[in-house]
Amino acid sequence: MVTRITGMASGLDVDQLVKDLMKAKRAPLDKLTVQKTTLEWQREQYREINAKIVDFRNNKLFNYGLEGTFNAKQATISGNSSAVSATAKADAVTGSMTIEVTKLAEGATWKSASGAGMGAVDLNTKLKDLGGSFNYTADAEGKITIQTGGSSIVLDENTDTLATLVSKLNNSKDANVNVFLDSRTGEMSITSKTTGDASAINLVSDIFDNFGLVQAAGHDAELKINGISTKRASNTFTENGVEITLNGLSQGNSTTLKVGSNTNQMIDTIKSFVKDYNELMDAINKKLGEERYRTYKPLTSEQKKEMSESEVELWESKAKSGLLKRDSTFTTLVSSFRLSAVTDVNVNGTNVNLSSLGISTGEYQQRGKLIIDETKLRSALEANPDQVIGFFTQRASESEKTPPGASAVNKDNGLFGRLSNIAMFSIQDLATKAGTSRVSTTTDAAFNADSNIGEQLRLLDIRMTDMNKRMLQAENQYYKQFAAMESAINRFSAQSASLFNKS
Image 1 (cartoon, rainbow, N blue to C red):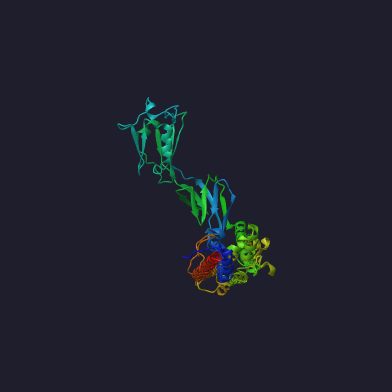
Image 2 (cartoon, one colour; image 1 turned 90 degrees about the vertical axis):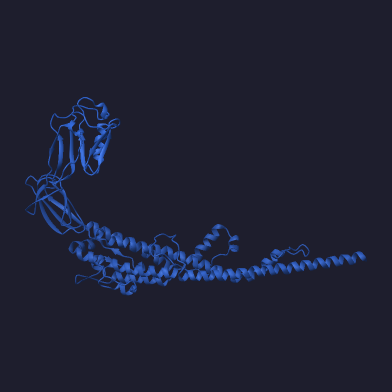
């Protein structure tokens, strides 16, 4: 430990002198600090763009490529539209079918015979207080058990009412029934939630004897599909990828379902994709073309002390600008994206390109931005939707090591597949270069230290730690030298005073 004596004897500002002497020695350390800060800023900007690329590839492109998202179908109804409704799924077969409904599916029922109910009753009266002819079997604690087949429902005559009886039956998954109790007549209706010949009601308890219930079996729906008589256990079923719901009887007036592409939804999907594509390209191109202010370096802590907050903010905004200018990873991605967009896709032997779909890459200054001619796109979809779908969603397997340029011109791969592979190559490249995440879409994901920038930062930390030690040693040496000078001055002053006194 060096004793730091200020210039009491010499009158010198030793701290300021040491500070001035250390400035020159700190220059190499300040240079390393600038390098480190620049690398950290650069890495953060890599992470920001990488998060956008990961989101574009793993979320947006993936969802656009799903059959149900892009290859949308719709069912239009003509004829008796009140008897049948329909929803086309993604795998619906294009074409038409006619349906004639002669009987709707119904579930098994228990229903009070006319006049066999309890008469007017307050549904909120506790079971034990109903009195009269209302009977049931309860145990010593007043518990009433209703067997439902799979389990049981337990009522308490001291707290439960007719209203809670109905509620518990309706809410029981095992009971699988819909129950209605009319307070005016005391009549009850119990209907199985399952329809068809096989439907049944499995409730066992003598409490139901109070309602004069009469049982009726369920039955299947009866209908004709394209003239063929058939039955269905449910009024909702799927045929050829179309979910069909029977709402009423046809009364001799059949319903026609026509299945085709949902052009409007497909256009909306393509427009949404183009918007996401353009936003990603804009974000990357902004970084690639951002001006670099080389005279603006990261500020040291000493420099910041001499500036206001607004001055520091303005300075650092310029110092951070252009750190990714002409970056090789992003330049490769942008050029490969552009190439993939203008290269034909072979769809069932026919070469299809963006231009034929009414989508262009715009002028050069728009840097690959996609522009849609919606009228031409609609015409292409209506003329041959399968070709349009194939251009975007057709997939061909590729190795993860396939270079972006090769992936961009693979005619067997649709545009979504090409872009996905190119994006993956960039994500991997950024992970190697900057330690960014291959899966995270957040801008605060942790960096992997095992990367090129991570290794550079590690080596810089080692050098800076070593240099800080040497700076401290040099500073201590200066203070030691000034302390020696102060001691010498004190000795000379003492000797001079002694001689003066003797004389």
